[in-house]
Image (cartoon, rainbow, N blue to C red):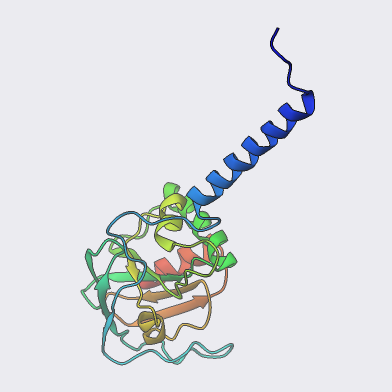
Length: 207
């Protein structure tokens, strides 16, 4: 007659298996850090042509209003060339950082809004993913924006924030409105409402 294993032994074996499974899951997921798709780079070189915008002041008149924004030449996460510059189209340029909790709330809000609202004719929405840091939460930005359903083209800023500096970024999120001649119409920093977003879109469209 085969011997019976004592109940405590089965409990111990089950505990060992459970610990091993948890360790395997953690190892495969890399903790809170996701993995980007092959060929994707979270930061890429950016070239700036033109005069940089002054920093957005905390209050008072924005000195950048009416100034032509510099041209940003770089690429998307997957290496597709992308230029944000004076090409005769009005623009909304949104700067986001993957670790910023305000950006993490703002992006889904805009995704939902844009599903049922269209931008004014001739206005395009572009994005700059900046301040990228693998040691910070919600990395990498390419995975975050994809999972959020963000469809606007994204320029991957350089590791030292070349694009952000050229646009006078003061904080996150940061929205810059440019008219069809490339001049700054308005700039907003911090979380904003969809009404504010819509108002700036109308302003850059000339309406």
